[in-house]
Image (cartoon, rainbow over all chains, first blue to last red; front, side, top):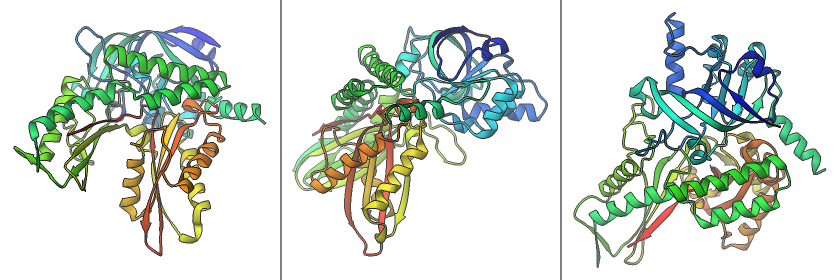
Length: 185
Length: 280
């Protein structure tokens, strides 16, 4: 089912999303990859404040290409999510509601998604030019020294994503493959 | 003896880095189209369509098709009757990478030290593979390689008694374990034989072969076909959401090996299978 969703992603909106739904996402989302996640979690460990309030927000695992003149951002497809697995539960506990990436997640992340009613979305890996066009504005928020890995605040319009793990823990990677294989039996 | 000046090499490598990242080659486009036509699973068809639209946007608007513009793999086939004049060949290639990644607005994804992890900020050094061949031609192939798929690659030293069945089993296991992570539909590059490092190099090299070509040895050509069918029977599908199209091709290269060994390397490439070449 195709749904249109705007951020912030409240618990109510998250609960309405089911694994397999295609979603056009609009509003503000934040970018962060391995290095930024490491720093965020280190801040929390030290009891310090995060540079962004993650409550009901969505983090997109992306390291975009540099913007050409006149563009908000360059190409911006998802990076593989499992590298963030060590950090995600800590951020979900802080209220992070959604993550966009690609690929499998570990059990601890899935448990945390269910416990805190969060959602894991996938964007199409390698469809970076298409996705980049959905980004209307990009502002640097923190960690400029990380270059492509810095945290950016993106304003997106109709960013195409798919719900992979919903707030009940249903997983499209398992369901989709099983249903397909059943259909050709 | 033919002479090629380093400045020409730099200029060409600069252009190849940009071209490879902006323009998906026709063989991959054709395979995607064929897969789209043969795909029966709705979400799989939708993904394949978006991947083709993405390639069009990248081409028409001169943008990288993928944000992971890769580590720059450069394959050099240097004719033994060619003289590279005016400086260092390696530096000329790296300067081309530097210029291409800056001028093409490509992402700089290389860190100087694998443990210290500070970005070199110009995507150098390139991973350069040299091969000296007879003749007076210099061929340079630039193949930016994304790490989503690179990270899912594996190598195993099989026993000779494992035979072709062991090889097939290992390849299928690697693809299955990779699942959605390497951005399927993928291209499965396989190197069989040689040594530990030779097998890996063969696997990487096999990814340069146009998808329209099979191995010239009929036995291996048949093995490629069989493995493609088996990979696509796994049901992983585009992006791992289920479907027929898990891989666009299985490319195998082989080489003589030791009586005691059967090395097999599987180097996975994503659908953004990028390579561009020039011959002097």
